[in-house]
Length: 438
Image (tube, rainbow, N blue to C red):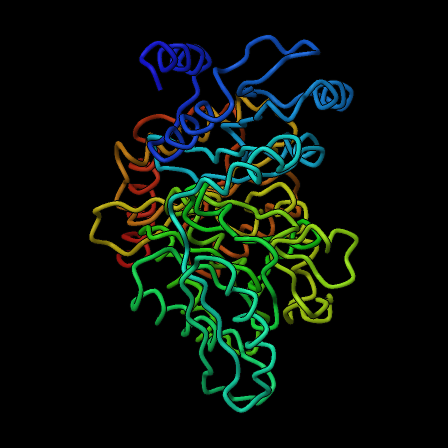
């Protein structure tokens, strides 16, 4: 990127008050290299470039905006955690998200566009090539694994496919798959692309390595995360998510792997700027699909909602948020830690985020994270949740109470002073002292 291009990008970001962390800015710079300079004229017939949206358009405006886009345009939403953008996101192809970066970049950056054609055609030029890894039950039929290995022969890709000991003869449980992935992570140095045994490769699966992300996976039905195709780049953030998935799977071995992968993603993206790519259906095609003939990875078994985890409320809680590539109210949007020796945590619930403009919500998020970074008030951990509706507030309160956190509920636009946490920390200490010494 030239100095002039960078300056042309910095100027509107600064004038709009958009704060991006290092990982988010790296992704934005990459997009500018792919699509061209940022566009400021949103009229119809635009050629190519990156469009940065600060405020969510209304329903009619979103429809007109969508119709005016071309495959040569990329849309970047630097405050993608706001549910006000969900409607526009639903009309676009979701490419990826980059999680919040603490006080320096306290928002989730979302990026998308019109279809994957531009990236799919360019992915063949990727110089980084993943190692394909897969496993199958040692006591089961190895025919499926043979089909995968055979399909790999015409691609210049390293692979590792092995039988593993399993509790069940005909299937691999989530914790067994996660342990296998952890062994592969420690054994090899290349990026890893896990492909379920029984799948076949129709094309070289180079899209994730070309995009240079931390992790890549597919959300079938646009919200349920699938562990059938899972890419892990050689980054600390990718390792952090893998370890979180392994720990959750070991703790809850009976729960569906997609549920646990979802929770590992949410947990990791709240604590580190996880650069996630949401893979197109061609990387998760099923036999019998209309698009199976254009598949890069073709799986041999259907997936049904009967495989969901035991929590019947999970689908309703997570669906809207995951379709928009963001965390929901039950999960913390951002987690920050301090050097305070105490293990006390505080949960800040920002309510009514759908009823206020995105600028007010963003400013309050920045004020809260800035105040915590300036003076943590003795709290070792901050969890910030964004709630659109009162039901969301209830779910966030329940989760915070289970963790025994101090709970503070605030509204967009509320004044957050630099001593916000110090004041509340002093209040809590005073209440504790009165309880101990009446």
